[in-house]
Amino acid sequence: DGGITQSPKYLFRKEGQNVTLSCEQNLNHDAMYWYRQDPGQGLRLIYYSQIVNDFQKGDIAEGYSVSREKKESFPLTVTSAQKNPTAFYLCASTSKGPGSPLHFGNGTRLTVT
Amino acid sequence: DQQVKQNSPSLSVQEGRISILNCDYTNSMFDYFLWYKKYPAEGPTFLISISSIKDKNEDGRFTVFLNKSAKHLSLHIVPSQPGDSAVYFCAASEYVSRGDSSYKLIFGSGTRLLVRP
Figure (tube, each protein chain N blue to C red):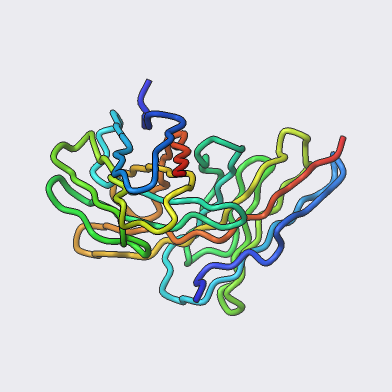
């Protein structure tokens, strides 16, 4: 079955450590996105990539970094510079075209203490 | 400033009745609007969308209405079922690059729907 896989489901880190969240898709989609969800808030865009080896900052990119070396993979690194890293992180992908819906993975819950 | 707003954080309806979820936006350049449904600890799933050139789109029990002059859209669920209980997000599509149809979605804060049996 085609889909988006995010791993791990739950992740715990100590403050000051960098951590990388995995996102893999086998939908052959060109565009991939990272969103963050906090309690009572909507999804906020961190980074997005429309094509391999290219990506753009979203609305809350500070303290995060990404890479897009392969079409299928779009890992997100939460660095120690991110002030409030504890959140639910969602990866999504879509084929390009007007109105094409984003397909989301099941998310990674990151807890930093 | 939020470009997409869902002003009702929660809604409770009786099974079989209509659920109406509302969404307001500020950017008249949005091309498409989408509704997503989300369960706890899962990713959102796409429900229905509408082009900015239309005023209604229907898919089974779900209908989305768009009022461009008011910059307002709504999702109607008829009849509501207990399995519809979830958080519903409204999203608007903003083009990043028209040359290659690249865009991003801007989400509202969500409305938690509870359908009582």
